[in-house]
Image 1 (cartoon, rainbow, N blue to C red):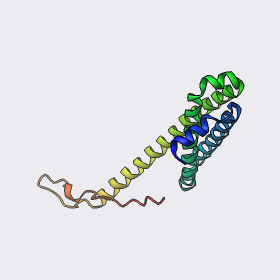
Image 2 (tube, rainbow, N blue to C red):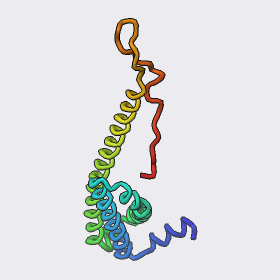
Image 3 (spheres, helix red, strand yellow):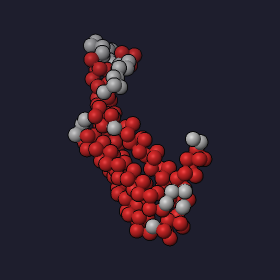
Length: 155
């Protein structure tokens, strides 16, 4: 099935059915994002990462439905105004959940960067030369500072 034929099939769905399918996909997306946010807050990064394929698929499906709803907006307003309103409210919930999810992701990233920076500093301090310079102070050889660290991205 070509992309054009998939779009045509979506656009030709009855108004209630199109809104219902979009609403179901939207609710599932909000649920997966909520699960991911909860897991990230609890520090369960691997488990949260396992939700990524579902989240990606649901987001792609929702975008397809949302575009069809936009293209069919006038028809849907006339034929299924209540379903369209439920969909709008669901979209508002998605926006709220996405904002919360992005805040948690940003915090997790910042914490990770802070940990890596701290580890690099400690590793660099361990490699410092322990000799005295001409002024009677311990000299730091910039070449012996942290030369890098390995990160296991499977975590």
